[in-house]
Image 1 (cartoon, helix red, strand yellow):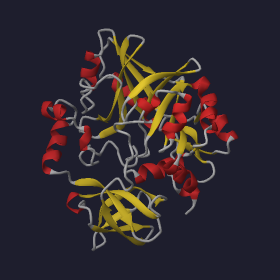
Image 2 (image 1 turned 90 degrees about the vertical axis):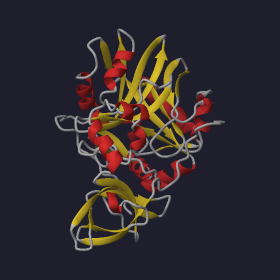
Image 3 (image 1 turned 45 degrees about the vertical axis):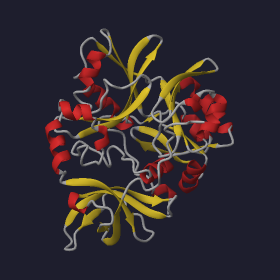
Image 4 (image 1 turned 30 degrees about the horizontal axis):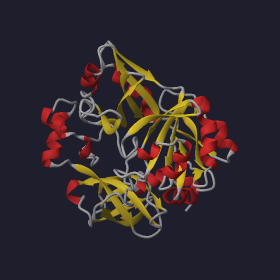
Length: 391
């Protein structure tokens, strides 16, 4: 397996000619990060190697720079209720019922029920003001903002927090390392968040992440990010980790990547993300694409995202075809690679719903070569989120 080819890096988003740099760009380079263009930014794909970084994160704690993500805050002159009502037009989650400092995964929908982005929403009160904090994907953040501005009321404000860095500390020992620096984070549980302070620097920390492991995402003023990252990496449990391992970790965890496994032609039901459709919202059926989405939920979609284990050692990559016995194309691989924790290749694909049952044997075609694959329940590697009883 070649470390350099385990991640499909992207060029800058359409219309964005300049590749941007992260607040920690010099920090990554000083630590030997191999920089590549991804989502319009120069980002580290690896430091010592994807396999080693992947396994370190599973066993200890890995530090990821995800400052390319869009951090957005919504406020309203007349409170949050009108803002939430507007957002629920395009988000199928129960945002109105979200508790203070609770995170919720949701999907940004178009009129046909297709997915424009997947994102995290948190309701929070800071300095006495109630607001919604949203984290969106880096490659789509400017399009997301333009789209959202068409829906929120005139008396609402949307602020992009472009002076904030975002770090993710992931792995079973993340709590040990971070709690030494920021006491109190150990009390958080999965999908909760709170404000903290480090050397009088304000931090917003959630217990969440994109690896399937326990861990945290830390929003910090960009000017202080390097010093904070240095301190984290002084902890014996922590090493910097690049995009390559982030991709293989999320694939093992069965987590989709926008622009690959999710796109505007894909509905939440097709993507097997039905949990993001809140019961209250399904009953109201008042979000974009509701008629189509609820019909698919009732009758089944034409295709569905599934996990695949691939026979042999050769990874099958995004773009490979799923083929029938007669050679006709019946589906497509959207993510694929070697799973270091499993010692075998895995993939995600969209296949006809009647073939989405675990145990179904399929054929994959890549560069003229056929590979045997078996539909497998996801996640491939069990999630280890701390949902209660955090130490």
